[in-house]
Image 1 (cartoon, each protein chain N blue to C red):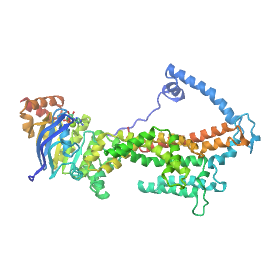
Image 2 (image 1 turned 120 degrees about the vertical axis):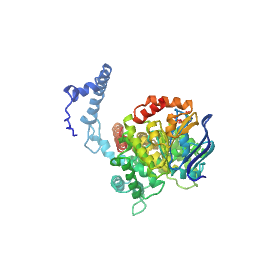
Image 3 (image 1 turned 30 degrees about the vertical axis):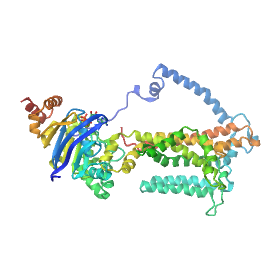
Image 4 (image 1 turned 60 degrees about the horizontal axis):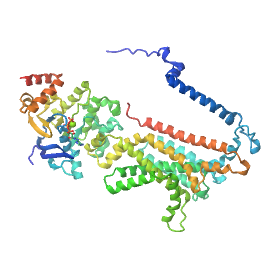
Length: 361
Length: 263
Ligand SMILES: Nc1ncnc2c1ncn2[C@@H]1O[C@H](COP(=O)(O)OP(=O)(O)OP(=O)(O)O)[C@@H](O)[C@H]1O
Ligand SMILES: [Mg+2]
């Protein structure tokens, strides 16, 4: 038997269009209507003055303070100092090295996405990226001049610290999560102690410890790079949170899945790596992204141990005698940059969720 | 060990904490035999068959599966699990893997078969359970009945000598039960050893060589199906049969059984 499909027709006028959307979403109940009106009032109070300041009355063109009329924002400050914000004290003539590694990120991202090879090989290929970047930015080989890490700064430093912290913490976090679920008491207890200790301490104190205590473990006179100390501290911090996020993901997998894997004869590691971990990671995506965003913002604390990230650079340029009194513009700019990166991370998380969704429910 | 007994259970006792879940179970199963286990909820049916592939540990007694005596030894457990396949009440397909990947997982990772061979075997079994066209989909896209048929195919892919079924149809909507039972009847005709916990008495009567009734952790009665249903010995079994049939008098076989109980 065959059926003729009926053409779908538009819903009745009452149920479509902008007006209906307004009615059903913003004015559905008296309380909702009141909230909507209050929010509109708030936006009316905040937005127009901001736009007046940031765009209409703002100065964009010029090369020094004299270009600023002071009626609104003076973006000349940000434009003049932008190299400083992006590269810190990294030598001008070597800026291309930073730019190139930024471009390479997208090249490798593209390779990762489209190379027709096994996932494991993709990861191996992608691992080349930090290595290449390291040689490119720090120099010392291939005829590139050495640039000491205390010259690194600004947005470059923020991105280096954040991305290494975020990425390195995931494999270690997985190991630690397995540790916490281990049946061997020593491993389990050590994992619990580590996680609970780190989570009970603010990042600032971990950074202090990393910069003060870590060198004590190494022979006197050995120069232990400040940036490396910060990276170790930040990763150690992040690992504890990631481990908990992944453990939470594992907790969400029903015991039936473990039993099905067992009954098929899979070994413990096959069961964990092929069945439990992929599902746990999938469940954990929103929280992994949340923890990564939190870390991205927390990288601003490296100022405490004398590293100049984006925020610190803005703070520093604000004290430039030629540009006194323009911190506001600087901080608004920093806010926007941080928001842009965190928002992208958040969108990337959503993309991953959709990509790996196989539940269809 | 006598030749044709593939499973020998002696004095099996199992406790969950203080709770005595299995009491002195003795059971021998012949190669190719099809055994149906039934009994009220909480009587220990699942526990019993889960002991056979060591999903549950037990405290006393021995289980000998095809010449291997079950202990904590990882190698022995693995050996037994590669011969004993299990089908669960809630299917337990791996939701992050496509149907075909679910099927080739154990053959490629446990039995180390080459991928091509595993794929072609998997497709054969999918055809036998009538869902070859769904091979590339994910479990979440299939109906319950389809998922359970995939689960049966997955269990078969490892070419087990023994199949365990734990209430394979009780999580399904009524209209999907028969599609799964049909597959199981087909399997039964091939005389793979099957132990099946189910309350589908029609299925039991049609294919079982023996039906076992459990209550409170003990085997109360066992018999060939005809005798089991028409001539129950213990009062507990009589009561149980009446209760269960009054709930599901819908298939022809069950109606016949009803008559036979009424006699
Ligand atoms: N993990 C456990 N911990 C404690 N008690 C358990 C556990 N699993 C099962 N039991 C108890 O053991 C008894 C037997 O359980 P089992 O699951 O084998 O029953 P069943 O016959 O399969 O019942 P059903 O028909 O409801 O599936 C029940 O009383 C149950 O409460
Ligand atoms: Mg049960």
